[in-house]
Amino acid sequence: MDITKQRTILIYTILGLIAASIIWVLVSFYLAATITIVTDDTSNTVLINEIKPHKHGVSVSQSGTQASARVESGTYTVTVKSSTTTTSILQMVTVGVGEHKSLTMNLRTNASVPTYPPPVTSMGASYVTASSDRVSFIDRSDANAPLYSVDQTGHVTTLDNRHIYTSVKWADSTFGIGLVSSGSVNYGLEKIDDLHVSDVSLPFTAKQPISYAVSPNRTWYISDDHTVYRANGDGSFAKVYTSDKAVKVLSASNGAVLFSEQPAAAARESGLSVLHLDGTKYQIEGEQYESAWSPDGSKLVVSSDETAAIFDDKLNEIVPLPRGNVISPKWQNNTTLLYIAAGDVWSYDLTSGRAQVIASIDNVIGTPSMIAPDSNSDYLYLTVSRTGFPNPTFMLNRINLGSQQPPDPTTAQGLNLIFPHVDSACTINFVDFTVLKVVYKQTATGRDCAAIAKSSALDSKVINTNEAAILNFQQLQ
Image (cartoon, rainbow, N blue to C red; front, side, top):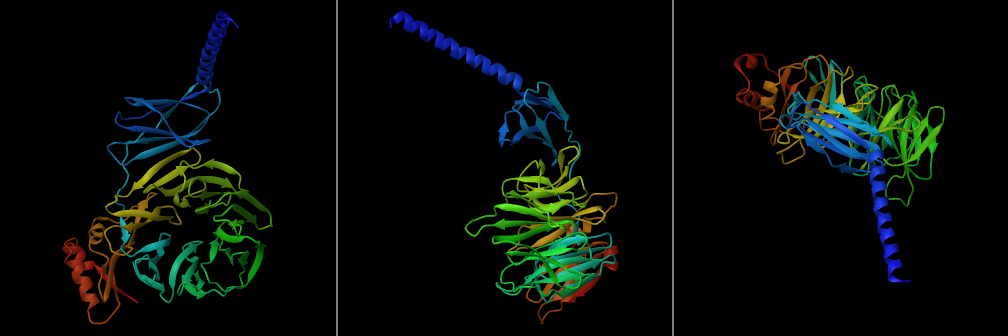
């Protein structure tokens, strides 16, 4: 082949590559979509991340109150963060192949969110259930992890101090099942019914933590690691499912139970199953860190180490959550999901696909670890792991979700600076559910805990003269 012919072939090859590149650029341009965001402040920051089919950030061009990005088909989250407040708003957007029009979203961030919601108690309240007239919880700041309840008069009742509570799953504000332990190889369950606690007679001997779930209509399930049992009203149990794999009961609705299965050789869960009351079973590959059913039982949220999504009751995915590994997901109603993510408390609306931060706890105060809406969705109760304490210490705060107004938090926030008080003989806390009260427990002889409680509260300089005259004190058993 002569040199002229070689040059001709080379030229046509180069021209062909250039033409192909131009065609690819044009095709990509016309197949791409444009996401445009309009905000209400030039200082707002706009972030776009793809969550399906891949997970990565997207380059955003931002000028003034407008930002935009060209993206491929997929599902994205658009986050607008305010530079002057703790407010963040997030919107999920799905764009298809060849969608040429711009998508404009006005994500306005003109309201602040609380960084220190009103404290309810300095007791280590976790695994909370609440209504308008009662809040009940485990005190996890106490090494013995007793179970308490506070009524509408502010009186604190010790429901159970005979057992060390590991967790409680509640059907409502007066019924729940609690996991208790004595040592590292003995576990049991306690039934809390109308705030009376009784031992559960298990159909097996539990040498490891028991997996269990409770539904809103007080149906509950347990597993001995291979068999799923449903509790009957007479105290007996019915076998509803058996597997040669390790079975862990996760959560339950009125009509179904969610559980995981893990083969003996597997290091992690490999399958999730929903078993309906009629025996119908649906299964998908996957694992879960936490899960929660919507009040009507039509859908559930499942969060794992990397992903989180909402499914129907047959485990068909409805929509992914804007981010994975959310903590303590709870349903406010059938279309609004509440959860903790990256230290903030979020509210996600399924109808609009929009999520917003409703509380951003100052890390000087602590880190959110659990949430629980009350039965009327007036308040969201928030367990915070406190900073600056040598041992694990928690407190309970609440966020206003409805039209109700909590008591003035100023005094409680002040008392929160000095309580809990723990010494060799006394444990002293405050409670501010409906009325402000100081509660104390005598853990050893030799000191007058009542006098210490009164002097600690009255000398704290956060109690004024009028409050001091009406401040209540109560000794706990």
